[in-house]
Length: 515
Image 1 (cartoon, one colour):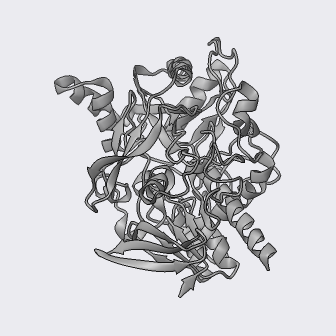
Image 2 (cartoon, helix red, strand yellow):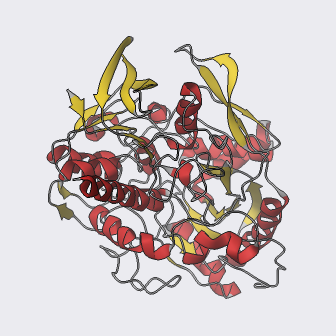
């Protein structure tokens, strides 16, 4: 049997595309490295038990600001990283896609906001994104969010209070979790969020719109085949240079699929790793290059109120007043791009591990700080990151348990990221001071690995074209955050899904043009 399309990876980049191709009547199969979980049975309210949702294969990490992996920047299982994402789904703003035009650094996207906008609308309606209408920032929306906003938890209310004092606008955030029960053809009914709060440990009732309860069921409704626990290792190409076979390992045995087209959707680490392992799609030398990671500083504080930070949707409140914050809030701006502010809830083990690392406490001081867990609230930023030559992924000499070279990831924040983080640090401390926080402390971090297979018009400086098709291989497409030319100043999940649907539609149009 020869499949019309083999989709590698079932997260935000693979699942929407898979559903679209299946609906078009193509014979499609998805290969996923992880298991196909049953949320009600497998997703415990237990952080340690849910380590199984993370990509825990060792990744070597280097640079001045070596990236953390495991429970950060990774995911495995049918649904990929959406199994443990917080479902925070703001849209990119139009100028996010034009950072070079605006600031003469970084890279513009080869498409603009109007290319993505109809897909944003479609994804938000399909997932049942809960959010405010109207939304205070960005272009006037053609459609409001599918559902009203979720309840704001205590951390969000404190952020609202502090921002109000400083004149910073806030809004309930857009979240891909249901504020009311929701029905979609091909998927069925999903119940409303119960504010359990352990979204990053997997949603048990399906209220959070991870791919395993949304686009994957839709894809299967239209006939797509899902093969979990299949790790892709090789591609075979025919005399014309097209990929004709995908080779993968299942239960220790090598298997292969014959195919007409391949859609690589394995994320910003595994996608370039697989291309580098096979030595393909890299005539530009850009596979693995242009790696970026959002600046994501967190500021925590203790309050007299009983916060219970594990309750409710973690990212309940947003402000995009800092999207282009030139000379606002009395803090000078000496960086390009911008960032968003969001309130953050936190699960107990996650908080305590960050507390130990971030504050360097031990003994009686650590016990006292840990005992205050139910009285802590956080704010963090998601900020732009520029592409630098010193940030990239390569294959190391060390081998993993499969005998394959481990990826080595180099990352160091540049001067722009450091200035942006310093700006945000001041503003977030002012917010917490205005809200009455004490024992305020900072946890520096980066989130969301982005780039590594850049999209662009020029085959000398990019890996795929504006439609996601590899410049070098006509039947290879990439659909994940590896193709982002810039990092954006928002969480990437919604844009990955929107771009996946656009890639699918562009592919289908090109196929019809051949008929």
